[in-house]
Image (cartoon, rainbow, N blue to C red; front, side, top):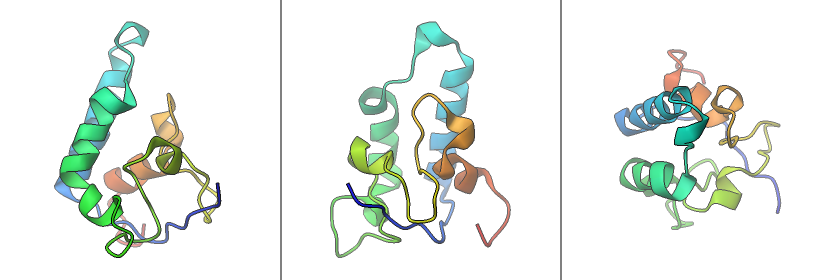
Length: 103
């Protein structure tokens, strides 16, 4: 799969909720493992797919979050939007929690 680009990300309130859910469920322990389709995908669907979903004409920054393979693909920027089991290195989490307007 080719690289996708992510140059700028706007932290919508829904994406901040996603970041919080991922962090809280990771903190809950290994017994409460996060499942992408069960725990993450519904939040992305409600809050992020408008700009980062299946519609190529509306997709921004070349980032597609509706398919796990795309969400976890290496980006043209060198990072990865979603790193399974490692939210600290996930570009998505860094962007939705950043206060820097240039991120």
